[in-house]
Length: 636
Ligand code: AMP
Ligand code: MG
Image 1 (cartoon, rainbow, N blue to C red):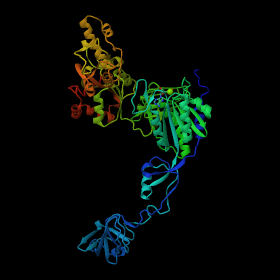
Image 2: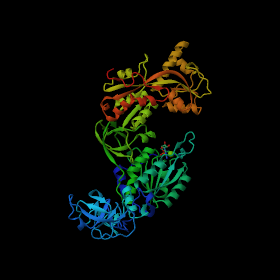
Image 3: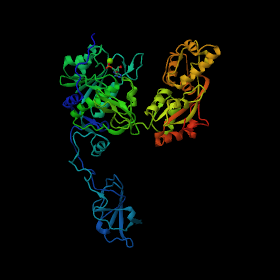
Image 4: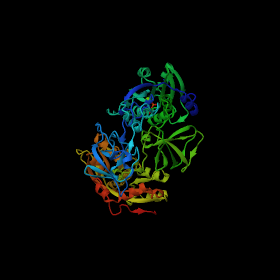
């Protein structure tokens, strides 16, 4: 098949204008108030009852006639005769005459004949009498029927988004079923590689993230998602799915298959069945987006990459939903932040994913197509086409994804169960990017993280400070962390008794740039020396030496499922995975902290926790604090 190049890209402003004119008429359905949250009211709601439905007391006290109290004073109280007691919810008939009072609870109906309630604190009951120490005026402490909501009053307007307050109002006027707009939005995910979450993931496959993420986004807008599942990259099946969805829904969204590559045929189907309004928008990410109309049903082909799909949804689909539902976008919260680091852009307008940590925005844009971008991003910033560079410290406006809570602390570096424990004990949200020690140092140098977790030894076995020295980092502090037992990890049935057993076994190594890999290299260097060969010669005899797993946990996974025989890593990780462990050495896992964040309360808590007894006691097997834990090194 021929590779089709993108034709004219639609400029962003034009695409915005385009979607602002698209509007469909939703239907109406009745839903139970228990399921109405987030939906949009289709009609005004009038109250069929008074709230409260009767005059009721707002205090515990005595119902009486106000004029009987007018002469009451502290030294000369008035005495009234107590004839009865009315609890809340009481349906009985009572009457208060001259010189009488009836004991009454908060929320109970006011008896006939009385026109005020005196608080119990201003009285004293003596036998069958009550002494009144203060005068009360007519209507005091009485909530009149209908004073909250009057029968016939409009309590909620059409086009209101239903939240907890609205549900409360509806319940208080006795409404169980409420008319809401039903804007049905179909979702079709396309791609031979997709598997439904919860099913088995065969090799080469990925889970379908888009169906569920987009459905959730549709709900957040107040519309109703309907999933049509995963359709393989097959023209006929796509066509069938589209046809069904277009017949049943008000709006149809597809994801994937929009780029002009082989097997990507969605746009052609839209073209054949209806009208293409835009194919390709001049925006990053997600330029392959199709906006079309098939039989009056807006049909939008979103890009397959999940971050792109959600960004494009927010930008070009949400407005259609809001227009159709006749509501203002309410959940789109914008926060002001400053760039934590400079970013380069230019060429096209860009929706740039960022993480937001304590008011600072960091690029969450790893390579396009990385699902982690989505998990690590809290929102997007819009960068204009002519902007080439945004400097660190520049103010930016971040449009947050849904109601994401942004993290308290940013952490880049080696993966460690001790960091998970720090997160548990501090109760802070730590966003961890487990990419190894080198990445940690790089991120600290670039200002894109608060803390780097590092375990990089030099030839003398001194940890981390030599790297700081070599990189010339001046505005950082090295905080000594804890020691970790490192060794060989293998399935219990494999025979491993030391580093010299490695030749002949399939190794799963850590990624280049991880301290753990560097430590294994030192051990291998020592072994090579014993054997009188070079390290390179030795590593050639170890199958898998060039592999590079990013975390301790993923090393264990590879061994567990038999892709490798042995790995080098933490005892804690081996035990967690139920694997055997042969101890080889201990490393020092330290934290490099940017000096300017040292006083932030979140960082202070973390550093205090590091030296706490609780942290020390709860460390998993193979990890231990020691004399230098918490020691701060300021100069290198
Ligand atoms: P496509 O637009 O089909 O070329 O897809 C672009 C990228 O997004 C590919 O790497 C796909 O595997 C990925 N992708 C497509 N659909 C989904 C989905 N529903 N969930 C997660 N990733 C997807
Ligand atoms: Mg595809």
